[in-house]
Length: 174
Image (cartoon, rainbow, N blue to C red; front, side, top):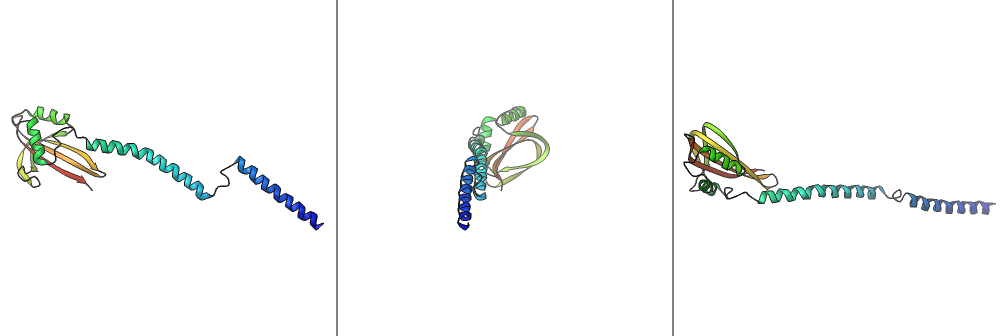
């Protein structure tokens, strides 16, 4: 009798193994450990994140590396010289505004305002100018993550004509 009980137990064990194999065929992921299932979620998340970040990075770097023209110069004096080639002293202020906006600047007319610009002789030093009616034009382009290069061009105005141009270029951000 004890032999028969042992024999039945062996047969039940074999049947249990067969059932486990069949269950695994029906549900192949059921037997996977939690860490493997978690890894699959992380892999899917990484793929999705990469699918979002790669196109955004490409857009960011191509946009930041292509400037519209020479008005976006390396420093204030070079920017001032480039602007004066396009908008010479004596030009109508409306021409200056439309030209700068077409080049990607945002322009705003200010009245009786003090302003500053990079010193044309030194470049990194600023010159403060007395209050005047000015057309202030501003533009920024990304350089790196969280850092932008900013161009400011200020046109001093008298009788609706440009009487002087000041420019400043610098980095903003972290």
